[in-house]
Amino acid sequence: MKNMQSDDQIRSENRSGNQPRREAGGGQSTDKPEASEIARTEIDRDKRDKTRIMWLLSSDLFPLLASAMRVELSNFYMAFQQMVSDEQREEVPEVDLYAARMDRSYFRMLRMVNNLTAAVYLRGQEEYDLQPWDIVETVGRICYNSEELAAWKHIRLKFQCDFSYHVVMIDRRSIEMALYHLLSNAMKNTPSGGVITVRLRQSGDQIALEVADTGHGMTGEQQKALFDLCVNWDRDRVTPGSFGLGLPLCCSVARGHGGTLQAASLLGRGCVMTLSVPDKVPSESACVMRQNQIAPEDDNGFNPTLLALSDAMPLDAFRLYHNHDQEREEDQD
Image (cartoon, rainbow, N blue to C red):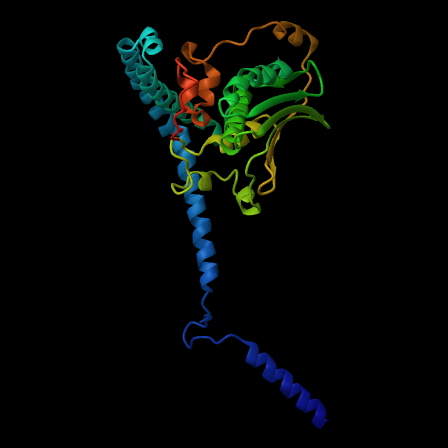
């Protein structure tokens, strides 16, 4: 009995010793959250607040800003073109150099305006105009038009495809926008002499669009935050001349099609971005109806490829006059 009582006493003491200390009046625990828990809670709250702010901005403010900026940019560029003619640029290399700087700045600003307009996709509530398009022609045309621009950075751009013709239900404009963003990122992160490979392939019931580069690659931590709008919008991370909306927009477009956007990368080994969309087969009548339709031109006659990739392009890509005997001016991004 003594041993049993002794054991009971020990268990009782242990139970009482494990109970948290309580205040005399309220019976509440005096234990305080650890500093790490408080910091984590504050980070989560800050992230939710930023997400809500970005949702509101993309819904209301961004489109209004884009509309106002587009008008003023158009007026500015029209006045500039009246002041400097193509003939002057071809005859005087210095004039062409200064005009190229103006062209590049204008194209980059117009690209940012287009991204602000497209920010409505970030709400995840936009209806996509899914129509039957030959995705091989759509992607192949963009790659063909981008090859010469990639060459300005001494980068080789390749297009590979598992089929010669494949009609799928997509919103053409948003898919093109996403591909341009992926190409732009690849060009900015691939050094001279590198290769960018764009590939279309079948992946189960999905069509996978891959953009692979031989660039710097990413760490695991960078990949975790890659599509986080709050992280991309951080003022310490955003690249000058950019709003950091590119990858979040790509992710929204993929989800809007019922697909995904994934990244695979190793530091120093390049990166592969894969945008997948459902391989939805349209009806035969719809396929015939859209088969020979020509894609309309964008952006009021401007070169849509140069505009979409302007943030990745060197100054020489905007010049009309090229003296290859002169040393090319180092690009200031």
